[in-house]
Image (cartoon, rainbow, N blue to C red; front, side, top):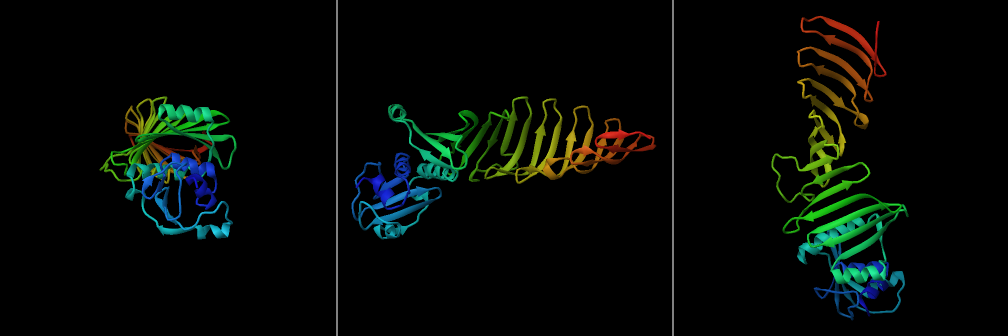
Length: 317
């Protein structure tokens, strides 16, 4: 029986088109040799399928044209589960990325003329459709140590991701181009296998010149960050699970400095002090990013002026 058909019939993978794509992607082995969808399998053969950071390894004990769900387990005997690295590090990296994609997307059949073009050019291109939104699609291209993912909404590209593996495929860098919001985010060493001592390992660059340097682990931002604005002003703050939170400082190019606190929804909340370059300062309070509450301005000679802000506007006596 053909390999892709057997995988589907034995319910190792539910859809034959997905089984065929898994074979085309180099994720399926028969007797430890990479196999194509049309490979003939027989009783006694051992099939290995990569699923992300795990592999399913089974031995064929029987071959039937059709089987019921409760009979499928009798068709195969599970030998062992191994890590992809035991087979091939490049394949394991590809399997890891594909398995993450298939959590939210389902593989679609690619038109014959496109598959023919792919074969001629040596490209590996796959089309996916969102499980949750029929208007959202994904195109994936695999090429050596680089995987490109293009995300579409109603036919319009909104996001592009470039995943570039390191030399031994133990980790990879991720570059995200957000077409809608016009910025590019770079995440170094997603799997944490390389070493970036005392440095930021992530960078977001906006088209207007703004950039944010940050620390991440597995593409989740946590720890100190520095935002540089187009005019040269800088904000030092902390990320907590991809959100700004906690104490922050803004340094202005004219010598002024502002101490404040990021609270709910990444907005300024609570007490804040603005230090002017001339030595004077203003103590205020923010509520959901808006100046609100008592304020005091302290001059260099020690004289203090008290007043109040309401909904962002200063209330005069």
